[in-house]
Length: 438
Image (tube, rainbow, N blue to C red; front, side):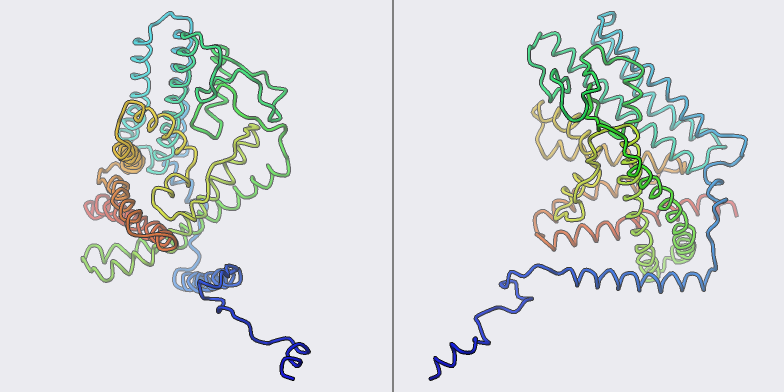
């Protein structure tokens, strides 16, 4: 009779695990993610309201202009950027001489060495000597020169590879050397595919200078047309997020940094840690917005305008379970350049893999310090040490932490690491320029 009842009415119990047990295989936590977002918005809304009540409205767009210019009739940073055309022309005419054999490879290498060394030291010397240049203006000019240095180094390498292929009279031009001999059908039928030395033109080098990439190729993948709606969306995002960034810095970060100076002077460690954690939230939010503004909105805008086809400017760094995965995926143009022009050449020369990776961090640490210390006109090595500390951190996370724990460690290093460096530089700048003067 019981079995008959069982067949008439379906059983209400089956062998199963609770949803939150790992054995259940359940993975749809979208509702919990939405809850986290709502909590984050509410917490930050409270902080924002507290900030407004305490300080009033501090956002001042006019003040932003004064960060770039001391004198409205003197534009030293802009003039410095215009001068960079000299180095671009030097690279082009060196390549033209090399292509026809007027100068030897040794002479060409020497001319490039002079050109690229001057490219780094000339702007830094100008920024250090000129009193009329502001820290923000100086940092912007040095960023442009650093990007140009990496681009021209790539330009040198690729053209050299093409000459090597030409000299060995190879019949198949390998794509790894960026000298494709076959036309690619990626909507680029209207573009005639150039081969060396037909690429050594003003149009070609300036397309590369403005293109959102650091790695040179003779024939870049091109999109078939400019999508006006896509372009306008990216332009709107660029304008909106830059206003938001300026507002957050002026309203949220500046007061927090100003209030952090006294605990630093008094060496009140508990207050210092409290200030650092208070700064961590706006700093991290600003960094995330900057990432989206630069790597998604701005670079896609430039790529769409120039019909540049390769839009892989970043990968899923937010899922990083190791520090090395984060550094390989958050800035793809720099990662590609390091891999192609630094890491692989070192490996081909028989350099140990670990030494090659450390060398990349050393170069990266140098440029981080170069872009911060020179505009501030003070050398404290905080950025350099911050980058170099990534090596032991990468080893620790890779060795002892896995999965979600590794991902959490990467996020903590991002959220906590940056405010420490920011406070160190601001404190030293404050002591140097205000305490010593008073």
